Length: 394
Image 1: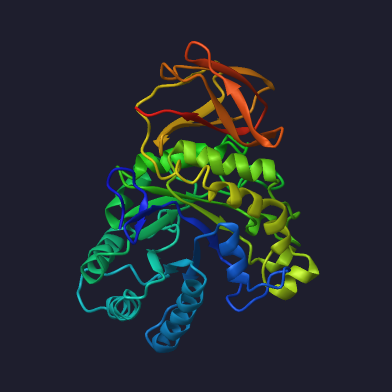
Image 2 (image 1 turned 90 degrees about the horizontal axis):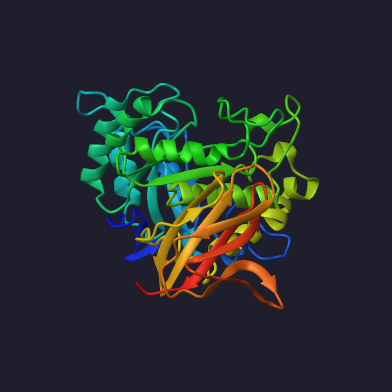
């Protein structure tokens, strides 16, 4: 289910900001800490893993369903939910009773009642393939008739104009794009003129337009085919880059984030290859970021409605959004590029005298900023991302 006021995913009636691993570690695997792999990522703040298959078949369906149920059982046992991929199945011809329709009914009926199922994943990157929208719309309507409780999510490639992507909005409950700008040369995945990591915001905003009012999830990079040896030079996002991309996607309208490529063994360290997942990247980059996003300090903001406040920044390369939650006004601001300088933020509600910069510390507390005449100043450099929190009740 989806919250109509915010576009946030609803699980058990509670608004959830999906933090997804695509793919996650092997369910029976072991983290370097010695804990079960799924227990480790759940404790770190992940709440969903992508599961399912791209190769469902009517002949193997019984075994595939049993295997998926096993993954759902393992995920649910550690407090995680699953985003189950249906591969090419949710694409139906005009004539009823096709093999795909029979398979769709079989899979959905078998799994829709599982408590760990959060959402279905539809055909991957259909506009790029291209897979015409009509067959996906038919499959979406059939799936909705079978299961009204779990949304169908279709993720597009970062390419294509809004006009080409918009017809797919009738075939889904949630859309989004995958965007992996960290590579040699930079920005190759997006294929446009902006080769900076700020292309994440551009792509997210494009999907928000194409979604026609439906929510958007953005899929970010751990690794992807464009950094796999021997054809490519391996490269991973730094913590600064990953953090910027995550918060910029949220500023641009993302109501969920997926992180792709932790399972690609071709560029892992030997110990990670043995475990089947990139724990080195998890420890150095992803876990610190996921820990922030899932923290009690920040978690209320990504699922909150936009605040009825217009805050302006004194530089054009600042992207920002405001959210109101739990007695606080949140301001999330990122700097696309440019130089390092002091930025003035103005337009805060009267009566606010100061706030905190979450997860930046001074004297063992969140760093504080002083608000004077509804404005404050702070330093931001290229690809900096800040989450400010001000006590405020409208």
